[in-house]
Amino acid sequence: ILQGEELVLKNGWYCVKQRGPKELESGVSWEDAKAQENAFFSTETPWCNLGDSISGRVGSEALSSKLGRILSELVSKELPSIEEQVAKQLSEAKASLGKLAPLNVNQPQTEVIRLLQDFSRALVKRIDGVPPIIPDFDLPDQDTPEHPSFGLMNTLNKSYDRFKRRVRMTAPHFKPWSSKREVKEGEVDPMIGIKIDDDILESSSARVFYLDEVMDIAQQSRTREFPGNFPFSVKEAFVTRSTKSWRSLANECFQEVWNHVVDNVNRLIEDQFERYTRGGLKEDVRHMKEVAKTAAQKVEGLVQTEDSPYTQNDHYFYDYREKLLLRYKAAHRKSKSQNAVIQSLQDHDLGRKPQFTEAQTQWQNINNALSSLATIGIPGVKATELIKLLPDDHMGPAFEIMAEVRAYFQVAYKRFSDNVPKQIDNDFVRGITKKEPPEIIERRKELEGRIKRLQAARDRLNEFSKSYDRFLH
Image (tube, one colour):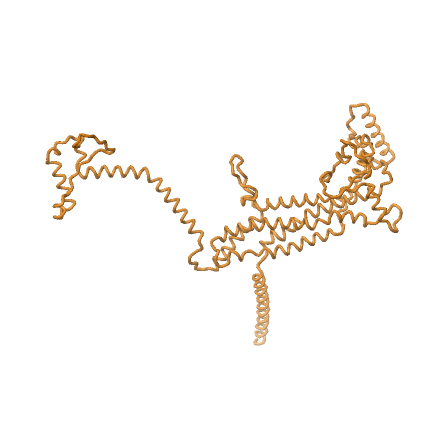
């Protein structure tokens, strides 16, 4: 002001009259000082002559009113953010407190039972099958299959599928032509094009046995059998050669399931008992090894039943054997450069005549053959069944051995690849929710025995009471 400079204030200027040292020493109160200030600004010049636009800026009341409005505006502006921060920190504090074990539990037994019941319900829910979270494909950083959001059973089913494929890869690998046959460059495998069901062709891991090799093995195994007959041990040897690795495959499957289940249960234990790291409660719920041991013994029993070939599934065995016999004979004739006749029999459609003249002639010949068979009393023969009539080059027994071994493998493979996962699921995966700790089992037996004895004693007392009443009357 003395230098004539201007200082622009954001909220403007205000002039107040405060108590001086003498007034403070004399003990002038705030109310008296306020009255003196009002009298000063209303009677003293130039303050009493200020215009209306300026007079509102003198006095403590004017300053207090202005500060009140400024404070109110700040509160209105910042209050939502403050409330949000308070709510957030309150929620975090409660969550942190919730992770701690209760300070004082009035009924500790009830609290332990509640915890175990909650854990049991959560475990049963996972084992019964919790579907995996469906990812949002438009968002990055989605969970991987190893993430807890993916269901336990979904993961186990993948292990069972791998087990099934591995067992299928052990299928006998027969080639119905001579091992001395020279394969021409670019020649298509004669087996291609006549694949049936889920049979293995190029992907089998087993050693290849050719038609002449199978025949040689059969001939070398003969002892006192009639001509054309061969020991069952030939077929049994081929079967066991394929099934000998099933034990290790079953154990690998069990180990995969064990790893997945233990990992999943451990995560559940962390969620349920994270607050109870002291006192051993977190460790005492882990008793799956006993369940796994029992389940492993039953899986071993399934493996042992496959040591010797046996089946009562006659229909499936016969049906598959007939299909395989046709397949092997068809491939054998293809290897003999008789692909045309095989192809015409396989592609034959009684109700659809081919467009080309040469094909029409063969189609008519096949129709005539089928019609002639029906005329002599053999109706219902299919064109593909005529493949059986083709020459087998004196390899008939080898064809039979190959067809029966491969047909039995199909029966056994279907059975084994279904029974092992089923056994693991029932006795281990579901078993961990059924199996009680040894001390509970012992306590249950003790109480059941006590109840039985007390009931017997009660019945004897009732009989004695009735006899005594009859004696008195």
